Image (tube, rainbow, N blue to C red; front, side, top):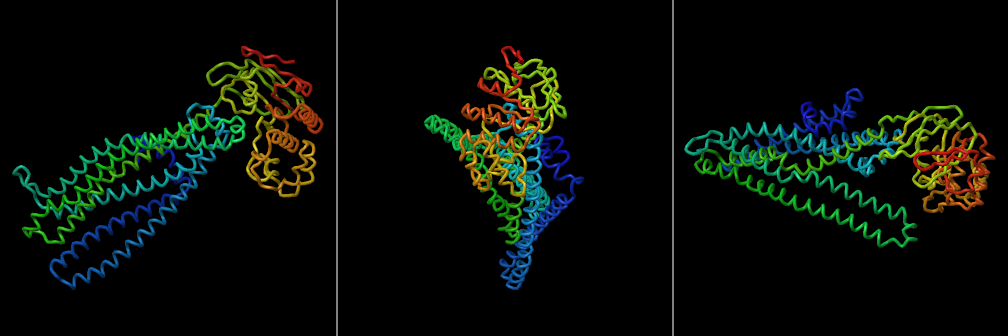
Length: 564
């Protein structure tokens, strides 16, 4: 295993995802479970050898018309079969327990990494690094664990069987004349040569399946995501009457899925067709070799049938990698997706040149320069100090870097230099607020947990401040509030959330864009009255916002800025 990890790509990929769970420093239990599973696998091989000898004795008794030995072998069969059943059931249970424990740990490991340090957001800024993270966490984790265990036990069983059945076949096979030379135990050499040639051809036929399976997962996930987007933006699409455009996009993506599926079908036909032909030939191969020895009475019927059975098991064991190549191809795809997920998160966590430090009260920008991912400078050498309770309005043309400046202050933008000091207690209000699943009261308290004590009276007064008292009766009602409430109502609910949490700094990115000017004026005045010590930094286009802010930062062309 150590050599495979160090010398092969898939080995290092496997260990990258497995080392945390299989580390003795974390827990020795998974290793003990795996050792026990290996032991059960070896027992299964041993039982199959006992079956082989049983077949020999049973068929020999039939040939000799020895009823006593035959019925004795039926009794022996009951014990062998019972041991095989118990071993199979115990192996299944242990494999499932091992897999579920590994899946649980790996899911938690990847989920923690994805949610830590806003990696779920930062990975979106890295072009083509991480598509469909939901699929990688939910589906690929299970495929990786189950395939890893299945392939590991399959390899152990195959290698053990190859050794055991080679020794059996060595004793059963006789010599064979090749070009006038008598070669003893020729059948053993023939089966190894046969499988080697068949495997080389099968690997050549099956290699394209790796990329095809990877594309199949990616294209299918992209199609599902587009379907989800139609549901998410159903209202906007309906108002635009954009069904034709959406249908064209969906059919184009679905056609890519179908084309890739057909490519897999055609390649699998070649691969599986060759495997089936090779397997069918192997069924009569030992009969053709041993027939002359049987007819010349050099071996009995039991030896002949055992030869067929041993040859078949040895052929299957030697052909394990050839027959499992499509599974290995899918496994390689899963490894690529999981390690790609890991690498994207690592890339998103690279240290930036921006120093973001804590300050008790103020927000301080010191030589802050902000760039786009392509390297274009958006804002250059911004120096600004906002004392506690001050309000700042940021305005400028679309694409000038207003929202990017807020992302920089929040520590979400990697392409910045300089230093920023600010309090840790902050709250961000976007143009489209995020409302979590569940009750309305949970949406109000987000991102904090809802307290257990009854806060209905206080929350009713809070809703009244933002002109939403009509929702007070629905505080404990579960609903999909993102669809139930209009965008204007969602923005008012976000203002109520801000009044409830009373952060030291509040960032408002077009947070009142869907409100009329009168309601916007009311909400900003409410903020100033109830949150006098909160520093408010707003981004907005309306000129009516100017009177609610003490300072005005205008982002100009050529990365220039002006403070008034």
